[in-house]
Image (cartoon, rainbow, N blue to C red; front, side, top):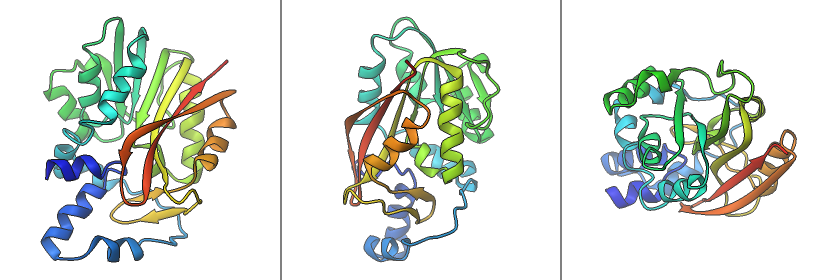
Amino acid sequence: MKSVIKELCPPILWNFLISLKRNSNLSRNSLLSSSLNIHAENQDLDIYWNPKMAKILEIWGEGNVWSEIQFLMVNCEGKILDIACGTGKTMEILYKLPNLEVYGIDISDLLISKALERGILDTYLKVGDATRTGYSDNFFRYSYSIGSLEHFTNEGISQFISESYRVTEIASFHMLPVSKSGKDEGWMKTLQSFHNNSTEWWLNKFGSTYSNVYTIDSSWNDDISIGKWFICYKN
């Protein structure tokens, strides 16, 4: 089960898809085919208050994105913001690196409570909206998000990126899935809504705010997507 979970996130909710498939004997392909061509953008939020989600967030990045974020942050220093930090697992991993002061924000008070339980001080945690963090301009030297931005609506993506720009002094790193087909497959819904679009689509999104955007391949992938890091520098 653990290896399956690692293979199928993000979008994080693929993990729930697999567990439901085992319980109901539905094929993944049939669920996927019924998820396409969703026209209305309605961001799913209830899932972030599900205890099962909190458990999944404890292991999903092993062997891929959790190693990658450490490489990206190893030479950074100062205040760092984990946007949509979940249970704080990634924050905990980054605490081993010197010279980092890692903060986290998440919309779910349940997930933030899990971060507190793991020993992260409340000084570094906030329940809040990634599009309106409440932090001052350039409060952080760096920021990052992992498997989060694709779940926002089209408008929310622009607001998320603009907010990361506002609160970050140097650079912001975002890992998300892009379509294996290379096409803009659009707004999909399985148990959670998400965008499965091309690298170029996302570059346009980030490029509307950041002056310099680069991409790095992630080792994460699933049946319809591959992982991609978008490295966004302000200057």
